[in-house]
Amino acid sequence: PNPLDPTVGYPDHYRNYYSGPYDNGGVHINSSINNKAAYLLSEGGWHYGVEVNGVGREATEKIYYRALTKYLTAKSNFKMMRQAALQAADDLYGKNSKEVQAVTKAYDAVGIE
Figure (cartoon, rainbow, N blue to C red):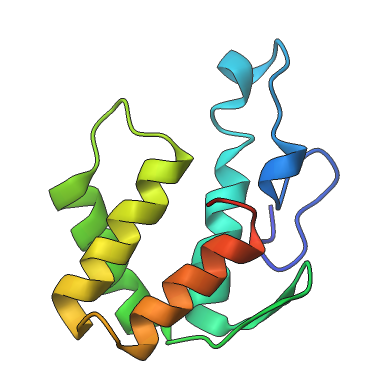
C-alpha cells in the first residue's frame, strides 16, 4: 500500500488494528501502521490531528536500522517498536534532538503510545 494514503483494509492508526483470521492475524496487514509512522518521520505531515516535522530519509533509515538491529526481537510489539525507535534516535542524535521529537510525534500520530 501507499504509505501516504493506505488503501482500504490497511490500517494507518492503531485503533484500526486488524485481528481477524487472515494474514496470520494481520501480521503483514498491520505493518502498515508502522509504515505510516516511518513515512511521517521521513516526510512529515499531519495525521489524525498530529503534526510531524519530517527529518528526511537518511535520518529515518539510520533510526530504523539501529532500532531493528539493536533493540528489537521477533517477539517485539508496536509499543516496543516505538521505544526502540526513540532509543535509536536518542543514541544517534541526542535526547532533545528534533529526531527524537519527530519519532515521538510520528508514533503519537498513528496511535502507538
